[in-house]
Image (cartoon, rainbow, N blue to C red; front, side):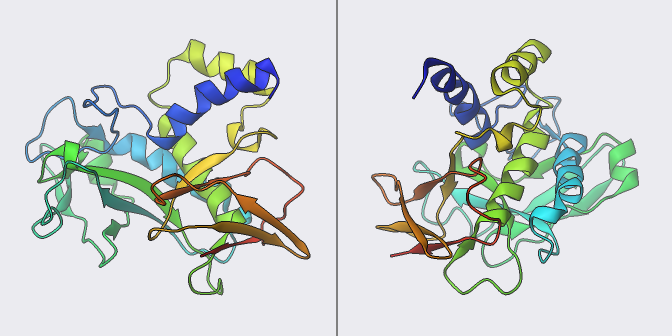
Length: 240
């Protein structure tokens, strides 16, 4: 990889895989998971930037009705970490429950009172137990497969949120290196995506083209060439 591309990857990967918050835990975790309101919690208004990005880039996944935010356990989490987990929007004057689906995902509504109240996204367990990723799923995708355009849209949601935390000079540097403000479209950028279950192989299928994707050693994630315009949004990823 050319030196410029290596520098871009070094900047983008940490920012997009686990975006950093103002006050981060030891793993740089963005999700706010605490039971009490604090100035160090995740601002709801920053998460709304992800909803804006979903709407602005919906053409990448026109058959996806929403973006969800899926939680996953980290290595230090106890086996029962999801058993009593709750998610809320919490402000000084507002409290809005965010129900968890069986896959541990939730949707984030637009709630003007919570926004005006500077509410936070709050969980009732230790924040070091959990990670999260945006989750976009188009209708009609075969079971057990992922659509490339959905993942490209997930990247835009992540960037929309992450840019709230990234200093202006760093953003300007990335814009200069990538020659675009749409970092997810940088031609050599590959996004690490968490798998729905442990996998051995991941194959990108676009018509007659089949490309083997890199899978992490633990089988928990795979690397997707989201910036490569050679592959269409309707390309699918198959897992074994």
